[in-house]
Image 1 (cartoon, one colour):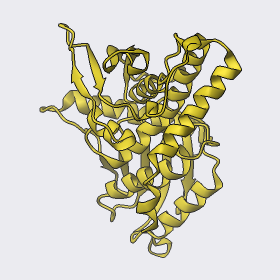
Image 2 (cartoon, each protein chain N blue to C red):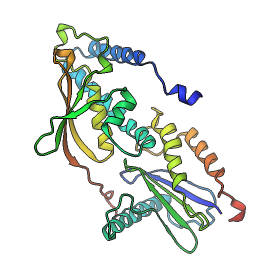
Image 3 (tube, rainbow over the protein chains, first blue to last red):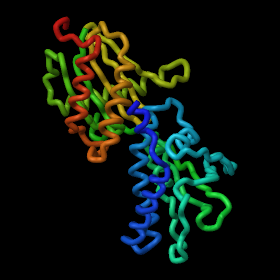
Image 4 (cartoon, helix red, strand yellow):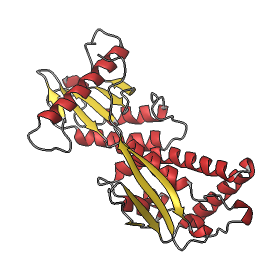
Length: 164
Length: 145
């Protein structure tokens, strides 16, 4: 039916759209650092909304379910820190970079930095403050893509100020 | 059988949405004051209920009833709170509140880029769909109230 088919989007179209977006950002900002920051910010705004869609559809929250649901991949969770507050998500294939080759003059660009923002925004909405960053990226010659996530704290719910 | 009113609060205690259907008597205070008192009461009752629980619980506070009405409460993991007051004949409105979240709030507010999250919801589409949904509920019947 219509509702089911509208859920299926051509993944290549998505990949190309994302590429066009990053390209435009590179033109507009002329500075990789700034582009990374903008991508993270956009991702954050996506994340805070995406989490609601996710929660409305599934009861249990597992990173693997969400990645499968929205990107069609299943990253592995490894490299836990001894304290158990830090781990890595290994992406064997990243659909965002399917047709991408980084030009030499963009050596500091973190092409898929949007994903970091998405994760940060979504988790903030379920009371978890986290630090998310890329440590390895196949685009930059690494053998895998690795996203490092560090748990910072649980966000406590507070009564709004001025209420006695 | 009837629905009196509905509140939606965000995680910071702002009332995002309010509407009433068969509410014959008002509280006698400003709506703003009413929202604040309602949120404060929910906040306290939630923390009290979970402190007093003899066992660990996932979802603590679900509803309470007085001699005249029942308050139904549903909270999402992202901290949105749906509160609906009905008369006593409605024993469980959990599915209803869940439906409002996943089929109305997520569809018409979250997926609408024009709607700023955390502000009061002024989407016409959302309001009319919600109103239609409430009026179509099997226990929505103003005459019997």
